[in-house]
Length: 397
Image (tube, rainbow, N blue to C red; front, side):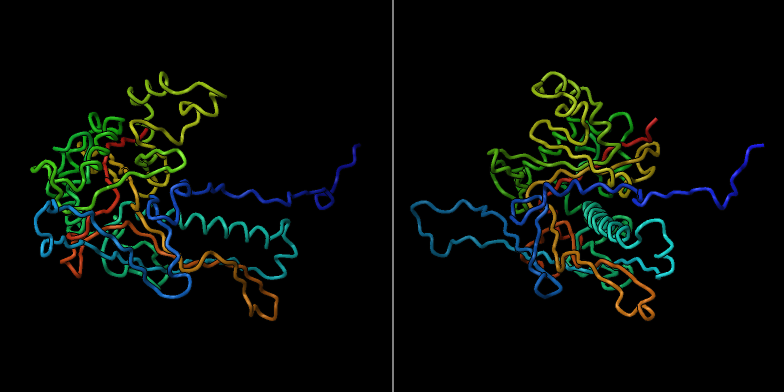
């Protein structure tokens, strides 16, 4: 008879390296910089002290000037505004005691530190996504310095009232697009979304080009050719090393999938893309994640679908997904304190240990009110560097 092992004598092995949920780095990073020409402007003014930083915004001069006549008394007044950004804290920690740490099959402290770093990356990325569809305000965001805190300046779309959304819709009439036709715009957001149809209004290269046309014509009076209307001009993002300018369009999974399958985009990628090098690593048909067409760089941000999808608000109750065509200074990321590690100092005679991370920052969509409006509300603030679009996004079959 064969001898069998007692269960307590059988060898059980555990990997020392823990496998946790994968967290990819933010796809916003390449578009973030300290220069005012960046799509997301990083502000470090609060790192020394202070709770608020104002982003100075100045419209271009729009007058005709004078020729040989008298200039004195005919000077043009600059239209300026300071858009406020408030920072808040983001903190998290993991605690355990010496007993569980000693008996664990993996290194709890090193695993906790990696998870906390991942949490810090995720929370900034999610806040940036929420800011894309926020309603700008000139007042401190709700929940600041409370639990769990709020680093998104303005009002998140999910928390905005119908009146706030409608005020934003009115203020941004020349930089908001519903589906494939300018005529889908209505006086209210709800009525405009009902004009988004699942057949005609899925994301396409043509819709992206129409949004680009809105951006290029922003600040120009459509009823008076050649005349500026005093509204912010959306300036394209400049890539200095390539001597090239373009707009950047952030869109979620459903809109990006529709764009990938759009016949015009498919043909462009099939017939016009260079074939040098390895096609599986350079051709967007195989790589995904980004597309380029008509001076627009399309960047897929999966969290837009996860966090901002508008369920059953379109025609025939179709889901609607927003996209965001951005130029210079579309958003601000104000850092008060970069992420730093923390630890529990007084843990029951050193028996309880804890590792944490903390950061202070604020993010917001940059917007401008007229010089004559000192206390701006949602109805006064105009998005500075962004066209917001809404397209049909039916559930994938």
